[in-house]
Image (cartoon, rainbow, N blue to C red):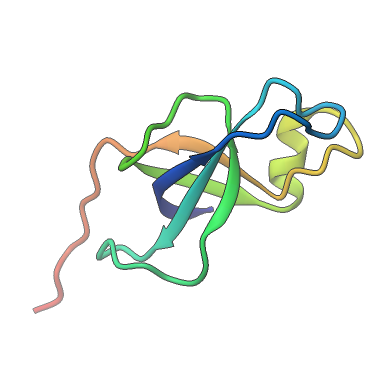
Length: 91
């Protein structure tokens, strides 16, 4: 799993079978200092995340298993909305 920030949304009328009622969001993976890491990702969202929120994403097979259907082309999924993030500072 990774931390990410929701940057935007995607509207797609035509989708593959099994994805008809799935909201798609553009997320930017981040590090624990909330700095961008890597490229943006399109992730499915079934929990109601919004633009600007910090989220937890999963990718690959774990994301596909959330759909419960074989063959659904899901690569990333939002699995949590971050309420707070505490990281000890090294001294």
